[in-house]
Image (cartoon, rainbow, N blue to C red):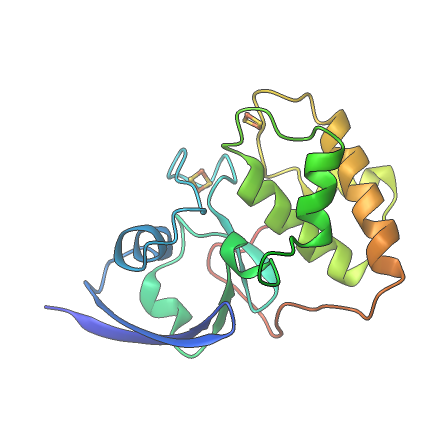
Length: 173
Ligand code: FES
Ligand code: FES
């Protein structure tokens, strides 16, 4: 048996037929070909699968696909404006915050969520925002520097929200 899930994905109306128990991460990667969202632990521990659900970061490995029916989902593929990278993506490159890159999409989605509400976060606020995103490579210093730099750029731009409302299932604290 399959069910239809209809939602806004990266600003576009999207419909997909999936098993009722399909997880959002699998729908994105396997049904829709958006492999920028990574699957790591599959148990809500690593944050590699982080996407925005109504503007809030969630672990998409913990969210049932049917949960996003009628909701708004943003993935790493939805951040750039054509060929122009999002300021957070640019900052990660400029500040050397990417090594193997496996954590990077999830890390960037968490950073985008933080900066959309608070473009000039303290070091503690940055640490808290990415506490659910594990990186085995960088040691986090360059990631924090990149987030701070992107925030400075975004502070001078109109606010981007990436969505509204509450997320619930899979939402990160
Ligand atoms: Fe690790 Fe989802 S894959 S939290
Ligand atoms: Fe390799 Fe973060 S860059 S896990």
